[in-house]
Length: 87
Image (cartoon, rainbow, N blue to C red; front, side, top):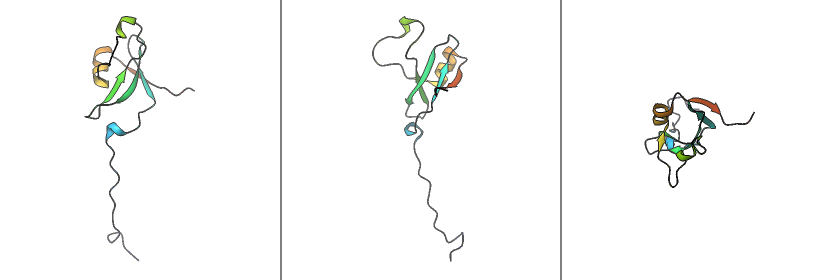
């Protein structure tokens, strides 16, 4: 029989934030555009993209700018978070 102090402790597995599964959340900005999570940057910040902006000129071509949640909030906020899961 072992006591609490004799039981070997195992450290929980540590997973970097940028490797975690993305939440099923989308964000709606003040203009009604929907922003979706696309990953995380090396610092762990959530990256967002707006796949269908209301202004077609904002769509652009090529690789998207790395919009973090904080940048989107500052530029296009206030943001409203909502579940992307169909009810």
